[in-house]
Image (cartoon, rainbow, N blue to C red; front, side, top):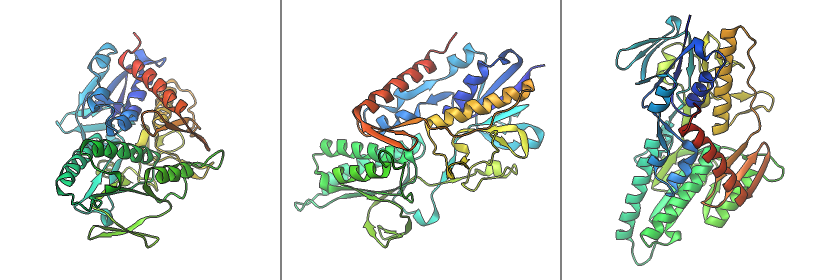
Length: 391
């Protein structure tokens, strides 16, 4: 009898889970059903290049039609509007009911802008759509600034980024690169643009051989970017951002990463949230109340009880979680023992520009040009595997 396994989400976690299942020892005994809003894969590690204006977004969007047809994977374009875990069923926006024996949730997290950060000039930068809106907005601000600048040449654009993740550091670097490109395009001076980065984190990374926070602060010093570590925004009023330290920043644009929240879809299905706003899972990445449902990727905020800290949302983490979740589904079907998830120290590469990257491995932080080429090597290798799957 064929076992129906449904994977929801076509990001890196969703794709990795499908790829693992189709290569598993029981691939002839399972039927993979894949659900996502669009039948395409966005290679998010290259969002830095897109925001930096080195590449275009369509260069890193890959259609999945041929992949699914080649490996006999049923793909349904659509969104889930009802979740009935007690009935092992999903209801799509089209009204179609999808039944499953096992479900892997890899939809990615939802983020919400805290109420006290909401303003007419607040922009999110989570989804690719958010980023496109942000880049268009900045281009318009530079075009308007070019027309309105007086002979005094005062700053016309002040950006405040409020975030707490490794991804947001990458976005900060990319944002600087993009504003630098616009500055040259419109023949403006660097001191007419001000960028501030505000984070509640006390430090990123460990002490040996270098703290990532030190690297970030050095970058801010070298590029005239204001870095505010271990601070939160208490309120925004009259184009002013007030920090917990009492510092007040005058700004006309606020870029917010937002807080992780559990979507109403899951709340209505009586699925529990963890203390960080994601889906609550056990060490096997299963939902406690529904053992045939697994979650992976940024939809969960896994807490590492060994290190006493939350694991970062990274490309490598999403891959590792998806592989383990899919592996545990296979183990359960075969009657084998499941494996517990433990965050591993893997190298994370944070680009700085088109030549330099920061390499983070566990508590060690390195900063040199070799990291850039390492990043390109792994990215190209992964893209090749994605676009040219094995026969």
